[in-house]
Image (cartoon, rainbow, N blue to C red):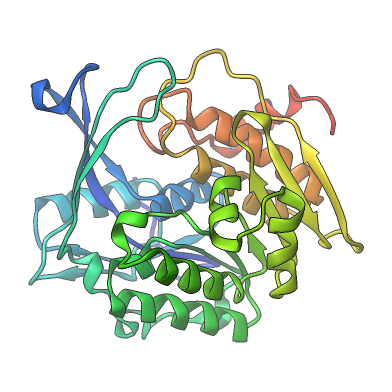
Length: 327
């Protein structure tokens, strides 16, 4: 049953959702005959994860006036997202992607068909009806500003409006180098967006590329110097690293990763991590608990096929956290 919302969202995410076709069996995409239809998008993965945990999450984007756009809208609404800011673009299509079924924990090959998509034509006008004063939190990634100049303008506009309204902001660089004109453009733009954010969530290799620093301590220091309150760095199987002042004084520490019996699909691990960190901080937990929850939900995401299928609801999360050692 779809939810109806009278109040504006407390959390907002924005970006591009795509219809995804996942190979039904391992092998080269050129040799696969059967695919499963899903949805994909880093921003929607986080939105869905937070909605499953009971937050009122709004989604700002565009989809085409086509069957794939209808599928995305229906899927997001069935996950409990508030889609009042999901616009239908009659002139441009919904983006598509095809994903391999990888083996032995390898990253699957993905082929995108998103050039000229509806979401790439996002503009600041699409945010006109957002009630930023009602926002508690905004989550952003580095994907929308890579899509087009107008989507980049929307990204800066949205972060600036959220900040001026007093909402907290999280930012995951989510590097997509192939979408950028140059590495320098990518680095300058994403670092500028990070400077508008409170919680910066890079992977270690992403942070190294964007900042020129080598160690987690120094990568985090770069963003703290730009105004961030906390930097939580993804270290893959090793867990995560925190440096910041969320708990009243600056501290830094590493939280070990969660053991996983089998890695099925690595895509979406970072988005699951973001869901864990953001939800824990919004729930009022410590930075250490947030890093641990990020590790935990990221570990759930990689144990199933699909980008967001492994994200837990609130009851499942409580059970999972009860089984974890105290950090």
